[in-house]
Length: 173
Ligand SMILES: CC(C)(COP(=O)(O)OP(=O)(O)OC[C@H]1O[C@@H](n2cnc3c(N)ncnc32)[C@H](O)[C@@H]1OP(=O)(O)O)[C@@H](O)C(=O)NCCC(=O)NCCS
Image (cartoon, rainbow, N blue to C red; front, side, top):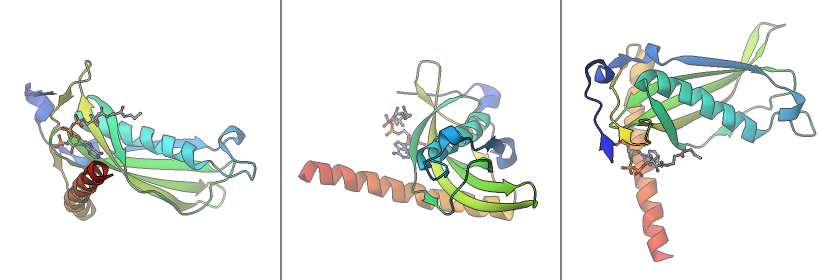
């Protein structure tokens, strides 16, 4: 069931910058494999939290994670590294929002950063009873934001097709 939060300011379109969020964490031994590299699952957990921050800020609501797209782990992250995760809402649909999360490792001695992973996630806004509700539209302002906004629609269509394909495969199998 979907509720409509048509109560004034909740549905006013919001610029991407209002959802932009950042998390930083030093990688500790408990989060690493025996070689001293950050566990992929731990990074996925952090990506989920960073993504949820942006979705909360955009929707000013509770959210649940509906999906996380394909992730490439581009470079290993080591114990002691400073991991930075940046997120923002690319586009909002009806009750769902696509969020992009990009992760870097910052070498604070050398003053350099390396891109280590990226992911797109979809969050669905829910009220305190877990009922889905509509979310405000996103206003992309910069060229980059406009590109992500357009691409988000294409990715949504691809996700829908994949869900349909899986549904059809289940019926056959
Ligand atoms: C995500 C969830 C709310 C979708 O509910 P549903 O009843 O299947 O609803 P619908 O199919 O009508 O989809 C609702 C919205 O979610 C989107 N959605 C649903 N499944 C999706 C998926 N796999 N990927 C991306 N978006 C998805 C739909 O596109 C729709 O978006 P819109 O309202 O903006 O058009 C429901 O499946 C759920 O509660 N899942 C568990 C969430 C959770 O607990 N996450 C933490 C993991 S432990």
